[in-house]
Image 1 (tube, rainbow, N blue to C red):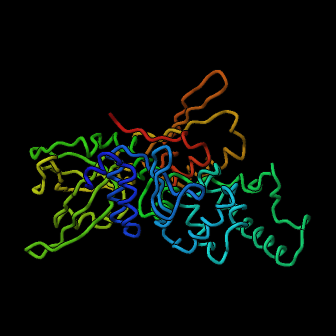
Image 2 (image 1 turned 90 degrees about the vertical axis):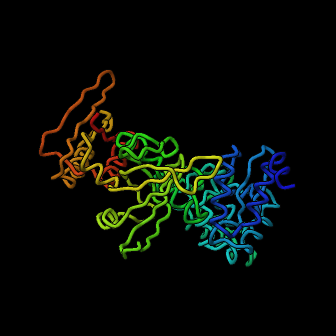
Image 3 (image 1 turned 180 degrees about the horizontal axis):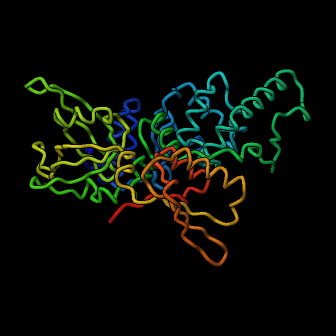
Length: 395
């Protein structure tokens, strides 16, 4: 019966299955992957569309259950759904004004923002979070006025009249990076929905480890390189009493178990932590637990390097694109300061300078060589633009 339902009503079936394991994050992760494999669209929680359980909208999309958000609970969700009966929420300020702050408190609101439950209101999560204090203050003042029978037309914290931009004073905040956005989803939902942390670095890492986990083939005659994110790790003792580690590596295409025996484990044990991106080298082999339907692979790794170690050892050049209209004394000073702080490294730096009708490559001298750390690259992207900074590799 369940097989028939899954075949003929896949979206309602998977929504019901996930609802049955609402508080079991490990099971939800498995079911979300199953939805992906089945080609079923899965949407983030939504204060204007979601319910306590997982549901299916008229477009056939599965809506993530509000009850599965960590830090929320039944009381807050019930209050949100009751308030929504008056109509959809217009913005964060309207939401705070119509819900009970004793039930939908700051912690619950932060969880809703971080998991993307307000994304349908078409305001970024960074702006939402920056506006939260004002929204709570405005809601409290409105509630105080209402209880006192006062219509305070001059004392509003924020102008919430029709047509006004309630987020105006916070539009200039720094937007969250992809890493911060996905971390918010992971903390509140237990998994990533809108992306994968590996994807931010995939283009760069494919220059070092070109084969996806999904495309690997068993070959015990040679070493292969694989890159991915550690999603689980465990250690155990061998029969000789040595310590070994088993990692679950995920590169968004597939997952694979990687074993590091005593010597390899001892050499890189500091790197073997959850959510670390690694490049591993070793022999790929068929897993003994392979089922009859699909070959399962595993790796016996003899070395592991972090993304930062790969960059320091193998990067050929740090390239920064500059538009002439952005360059002034303040910009030049900031850029110079960032590069000087990352100095004494081995990676050359070059600019691509763009004017209205021409462009030129400007390599910097040896004294400007840097250590291409993640902090440096993120700060350069904030300074010059998200797509303006890249690392190249030989070959």
